[in-house]
Image (cartoon, rainbow, N blue to C red; front, side, top):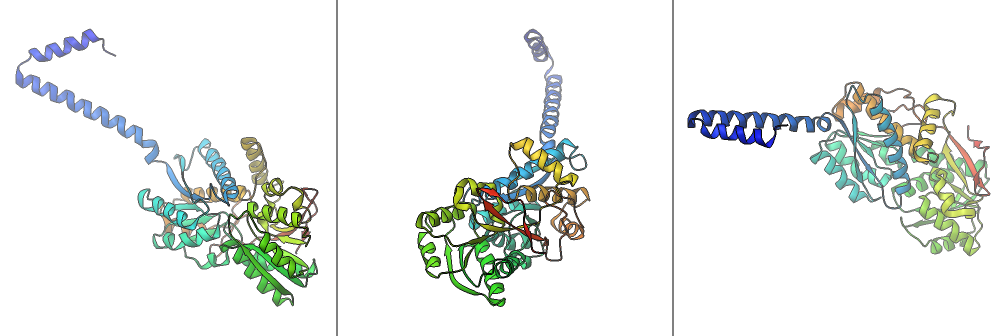
Length: 398
């Protein structure tokens, strides 16, 4: 760096020069300064502009936030690993997160922002089926790949050619739940208590249709609002119908409320729930009111699989806890999109074509293959809560 004396001397020399020479020299210095500033500017922007940018629309707040946060932690872990390993063909991965707030309208606004302002070609999200169904036409119209790590409504299968999910459809889970209720639990009369959105209503409809097809009877259907803290009226309704059991698809906060209020009011009807019940958060919220609940989950991946074992170890080390629902599918979703970029894809149509060609992608949730509708198929098992613990011996449906 020049001293103050040197700078003053240089300026004095310039001032004493003839005007033409002084003008030329000053102009040259200005040009050099502009060039130098441009170089600095370009180098400052280079890392951002050259990064592989992936969008994410997740419920980071609201009633589905536990799953959105789980997915985000899984995705963040994948990003850290990819970037530490040299990135994608030498380029770092950068995820642009948007909070859907568990609200479809907010989710669509977030997606529009990523597409129009950020020019993102691949978006991971949402967890909630209602948000995915709301975003699907926008993604499809703009030819942007949308990959959900948690949405399950059957209508998503036909929501558009750019809509994918590495989460199973309710059409599969609802059918298996109905068969289990009929054959294993020997229920003849079932009441349905479910969250009134695309997720809960989708599961309830498939279950009810399948159960009736097996000769069973649906004696009551009692939806409750997403985000509610009072399910007493619905509980009274299903209890009055005197069912053999209650089918309850919902989110952890509302299901915990329902279980606690059932216990408070003395309703002790057996309950069959869904994969959402597998999140450790629900036992924390419901306590021993969760005891006795049976629920379905996809067959867990082989814990000895190196990808699965490494993910679980790294997740526990990073966050100090075991992965929750959507942690592994969020991790896999990010890895799958990264794989498509590694294969040379850069636009929505190219990423879509890569995902359709994907076969048995090794993931934390097990191998992933997409069918022509962008869906995955998984086997299911059933588990039970006893003394606030998950019973280790699941009953297979196979």
